[in-house]
Image (tube, rainbow, N blue to C red):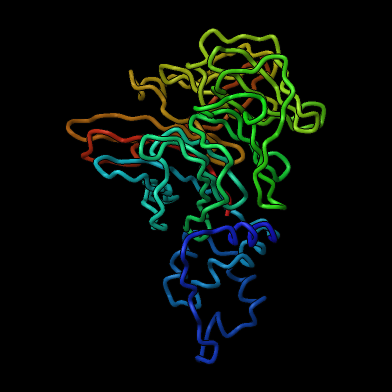
Length: 378
């Protein structure tokens, strides 16, 4: 977990560390040696850990400690939690929410007062949190990079990028974050790509050889090709590219998508590429082929969505996906969520089964800006 400590060292926010009086008498769990106490707590669910943290300052210090995260990881007791970033008007600041695993409602997360950009950010999921990169603040692109720690429910600041970016695309490969495009003032091969190295905690421009400089990346996803991780991407003209970090080259694949704006939220799901289409449809294809087909078996989902398109597709766990869409019953604005499992049938088609669907948020607001959703383990 050296990386976790290093990232927290990047924080530019003021933090008042809690001082715990170790001389005070304790009993029960805290009377055990720290190693034993951590092993016990590592087997408790995230939901119950939140209750344990409310018992005292010392309980909370153990619950949010990096050591507990390490033990849970080694013991295989990590749980998938679904986080959502939304701006609910008239509140000007976006807020993080977590999907309660029992109540199946989105609960606001109490985090620091740092305000995420209103729109145009790109996101990268790390082992224990989510990076928000660039976007619009006060109507202008920003180089700011923040990190939402899903274990502590705190927001930290990374070193800013060299370029202010909005509408960029970001990918995580081998402990480095690659950010493509999003430059409004200047966009050439010398500044089009930036890379953040977790070892040095610095941003550097990356010169990428390409026979054609694409427009802004519309969608991108990390896939494995010949045992090497690559970024597959499509620009707003529908041109498909692949990027190899080891070769530092961006290569057009010769494929064109006539409607890239209708193929959003790319996901790498085993050997498949998933995206959300229109009319409540989820599409799939094999990488490099880009022959999109509809996931079958989700007719009930399309009936529930009605004319409302899916606004977000993301992972719900390692084996399931989640989708969100908006509905307007009476005077309320409702955000609906569905959990879907996928399987490949003998005939070669990909089928989905809806395990749950229902409203997860109701609000009297007339507008909700849905910014991001991601599955994080902890």
